[in-house]
Length: 70
Image 1 (cartoon, rainbow, N blue to C red):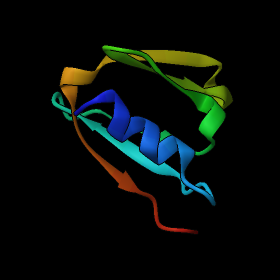
Image 2 (cartoon, rainbow, N blue to C red; image 1 turned 90 degrees about the horizontal axis):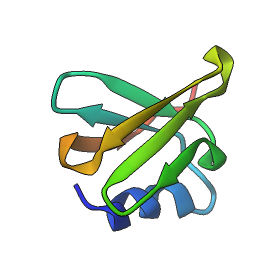
Image 3 (tube, one colour; image 1 turned 60 degrees about the horizontal axis):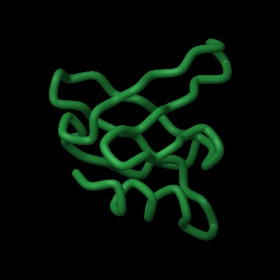
């Protein structure tokens, strides 16, 4: 996955929450565009409800999928 693809998801108007799936099977939901920072080789995902962040190398991002509205 490349940085531009992840940025595309964060810049969609209107914003649609999405999930990032990693090569190790982990998933990270992004419910707000301000909860993700896309850098050159990694993505930093904020989980405000848990008061934590996760740094992920872009080479480990297998897919991104929009979340269904609940």
